Structures are given as C-alpha cells and as structure tokens.
Length: 363
Image 1 (cartoon, rainbow, N blue to C red):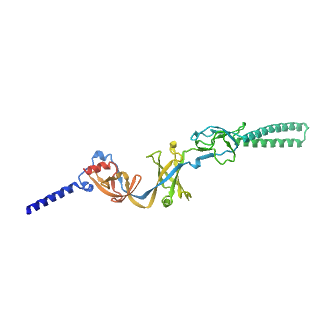
Image 2 (spheres, helix red, strand yellow):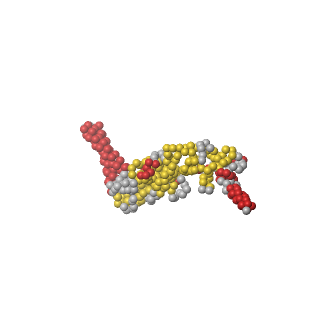
Image 3 (tube, helix red, strand yellow):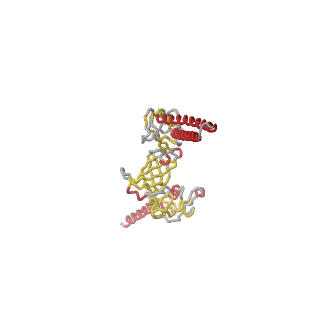
C-alpha cells in the first residue's frame, strides 16, 4: 500500500515542477542572462519616463468654412441686364479679371452726364478765354470776366463729379458695366445667369470670391463639454477626403453662445491651406487636446508592448540588465501614454525595436 502512494506523489511533484517551468511569466523570463548585441545597441533609441501635465482628448464634429476675413461678396451697384458671364463656379480668377458684363440704363445715364459735362466745360473755357481777351481790349468789364471765370469753375466742378461717378461704376462710355474681381481667388458662389435682370437694391451677392489660402474649421461643442475646451488648445483635424492625414492647429476663437437650433457652441480653428486641400463644406473630425490640473508619469507610446492582455515596457539599465516590467496605462494622447502604475520618473526605456528585444527575452 505504501509503494503506490509514494509513486503517485512523486509523479504529481514532477508534473507540478514541469508545469511551473512552462508557465513562467514574462517578468520571470526577463531574469535570463540576455545581453543586447552591439549591432542592435547602436540602432535602438532610449526613452525616458517623465512627469508631465495630464492631457485628454475630446472628439468634436465640424466642417471646413471660408475664412470670412478673406471673402469678397460682389453686390450689384447698378440696375440692368446681365449679357456676358465670363466665369463659372470654382474658377480661379485674378485681381481685375472680368466676371460679367451688364447692360445698364444707369451706365448710359452716367455716360451721358459725363459727355455733357465735358462739352459744357469746353464751352465755358472758350467763353472765359474770349471774355479775358475782350477785357484786355477794353471791350468787357471786370464783372464780365469774373462771371466767365465762375461759369468755367462750375463747369469744371460738374465735369469732375460726373467723371468720378462714371469711374466708380466702371468708366464705360458704351452703357455697359464691367464687373471685375477685386482680389485673386476662387469663385465660391455665383447667383447670376445670362439675361438675368438685376437691381441695385438687390441684397443677394452676384459673386463671392475667396482666396482659400487659409480656411476656418468650425467645430460643435455640446453643453456637457463646454468646460473642457478653451482658446489655445491644440487640435488634430481629419477629413473623409484625406484619410490618415492630420491637419494641426489651435482653437482661435470660442463663440461663447449656443446655437438656438441645435444647442451647440461653436469653436473656430484657422488653418493654412497649401495646395487648397481643404474645401468649404467638407466634413471634419476635430480632436481637441485638453490639459488637466495634475501631473502623471508618461512615456512615448512606441515603448509599449501589449501581450497576454497586459501592457509591458522594457526598463533599460545596461545591455546586460534589461527588465520586462508590467505597467497600467491610464490614457494615450497622440504619441504619449500616461502610466498610473509600474514606472517612476527618470527610468529609461527601450523606445525602438522593443518588440524584437521582448521576444528575445522570452525565447
């Protein structure tokens, strides 16, 4: 009876030892005498654990909009009929380029006034010269000369006024008004067609021109998140058109009022737009990076290794002293991860090739 009992006890003991050897944790495996090769040591980068202000992220919806400071709306200043539209929606135009031609009775009137004023000025000049000659010959009085000079001055004033009015309305003497672009930019809105009749009291802009060199991104903040955003917070913006591309900026303005229709507060981000990638009305996802009033140890996210449902880092002291350390991740913002347990400020970590070295330590 004693021999079988001891036999089974020995088998159980050996099985337990064998199982323990095969189920060693990554931390226990790191105790092996692994030495980092010189060839690998020269290529890896070492990161440091730092104590930094805690950052969080808040994802908002938004859209790309015109920079209203760089938008020109062209309203009709005369009445008439549109006869020749030169540009289409989306066209790039240069300063002074003709957008449309309008046949206008107003312009015909300005042209007629200018022509009459020019003719009257010439008559008044000739009359003044003739009166001056007669005055020198004793055939006209000084009063006649003064009257002639006053007539000339009045005619000149009328001529200059009619010329300014004509020039302000394009300067054409053919009864046509030429609408020109005041800036370089894109035609982002057009509310006029050929043969359309327009009036000078029309409140709708005929053309809207924007240079699009920089744009606004307007983001929506719901009431529950208002306290989590402020001016100057950095933002990362992505669009459906350019997956994977991040546009970086800062909150430029907080509107501080709620839109009555959807109960959101607007944020504005001004972005440079090289290549005109961002186009008005594009949907945008806006990730706001906010800061908390507390500090926590943090590391570069590249140093993290995820294995067996646990995060690990490789603590580096020397090529022969590399330890696998389990850590508790609090939050990840961009390329930085905040650690709640497992590390202290100043420790050094393997930042590149960490997974390769981790596998070597566990092999």
